[in-house]
Image 1 (cartoon, rainbow, N blue to C red):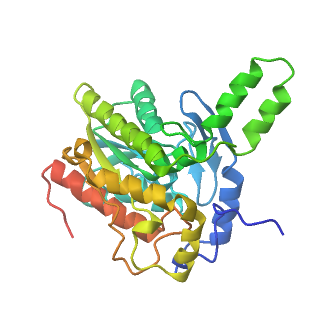
Image 2: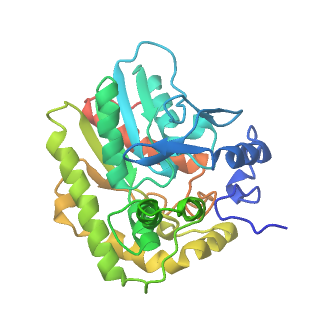
Length: 330
């Protein structure tokens, strides 16, 4: 039997046990079909190809479909981030963008919420993604950034901060293609994960760079927001290390990330004391929003259940309603 991949949908995840209208096996089949169904995307490297399934659908722009209720939109929102925004582990209607759209609709706001999340994207890719989106589409009123973890994991994977996942292999491909007869090696690097023979850099070095890059990307968005007339909202995402009450399954899932735990913890601790971020009114550290939640929240070592997504979407919903000075209806 093939070894289980940590990103495979696990039907034994305890957050699925009470799901009444969710066939975990069907979702898992769709996820296996799509997870390697990627296409090249200029500047950001990759995005999903179009796909239509029972639980997962990706449109012609390579974005996962949001369940937006019909009507002429009076608000446009884009949400950027990695696979937690994209919605690994949940159906289309239970992604963060879909849940936020539904919450806004209940107040009479017909929001067009676009899911710009892609698996593995770190903040530099988020910024580029937003810029490319604004070139081709009506400008959003709000741009929501929900991220943090991928900046750390990409730094550890590449043994170098400030670059996307698998960057080390992209460099090898470029160097190989400048020499004749190396196309086969290039294919090898495209297929197999990045590996480095270099000694792993100390957490201080990697986190220094990752933090500077994270802050720099937010500063860039702050610099252009008035020019393009949109309101950015920034959220530092929770991780499985930011939850007090863990199920047996969640404790097992923590083990997949035990080697990068010191990097994640240091990054989050540094952010809490980083005035370049904490002085921004619309930057919100919600890393502990699941800390006291007793129910299982993680479908694997990184991605959230539908119930946890609803908690995160509620944070975004309350903040948007405060921005437009509208009452929050219970």
